[in-house]
Length: 469
Image 1: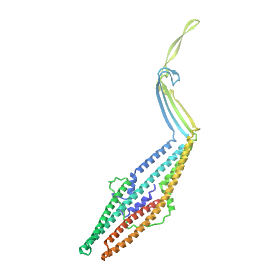
Image 2: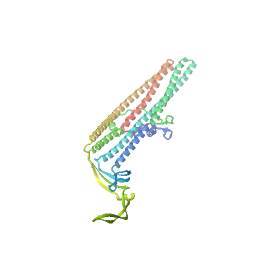
Image 3: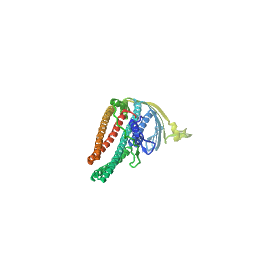
Image 4: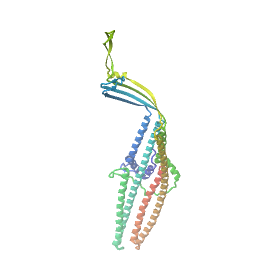
């Protein structure tokens, strides 16, 4: 299966300049692979594939002959018919029947062959569904991974800011001790330090929240050890390039599993129409059977005979005649089985004449299913095109936002530098400097968010474009 281009791109970007030898460090690729292995939707889709595979294998076996055996044993009271000679008996009678039969479908209106084709397509469809689920997992994990990186960089910014404030507070204490500035100016810096300490706590909480979101997207226990690889993106500068959206759409149309699954469902529904129409056609099958029976009322000659006399009257005088008659005994069951053996072969033709409209309804339902599959395929393509258009617009907006924040930082930094010079000259205002510093801190944090937002939006578009970085 083709590797997810988003995974390749983000994995390369986020793991560059990082040693992956440490097994305790989780890079993006490892996080995604773990998430895909542990995800319950993936497990469910695997069972769907297994189910469709079994149905496919069974549909192949349906072309083979079938064989069945049957037996019965009973006891009859009173009036009954001896099955071995069809004579009426009134005594208790034990009977048994044994048979074996086989059948072979010679022609079933193409339903068997079409069912095999449909089940084969259904396997491909379920595989495409699983690939789509894995893509969504990769997207979710990658986004959660980036949020951790954003929170981590915001924490580093907060630590840098408070370090700067502490240094400035130390210089202010020296100036207060020298009597060059009033002690009240220290309160402004102390207040600034308290604000920045709060920012550190907030950033740490954001990391905890982002790590929990990452663990949950991976289906990893909340208390499991997880340390992610952190790339050095401090010098990374977003660069906007031109994209051909129509070309990206055609690439995505041929690579996205959600589109493949939608098209496969159309194929399956078309075959389903053929199966439904096949039920209108005659079916022909061959059959063969063997059987035997037994009865407790079955007798056989014992090999002995007896003299039977009979008196008749001839001219008014009695005359006795003697005849030798064979002696009969009950026939053992094991003797009856081969003697009563029978067999037969034949052909069976079934012609559907009137099924109360059932076959016609099934054809119409199959045709509706095909129309629904076609509409769904068109809807998936429409959604894909709209997602690509949205991804491109989001990328442009993200880049414009990054440039705006970058410009804001340049202006704010110059303003803060000017105020610093005024303070050094004894004409500046510490409160103005603090406000300017806070504005710069906020702009730096906004730049971090804008940078990672651009990375994310760019990878989304490249994912649709099928590019591996």
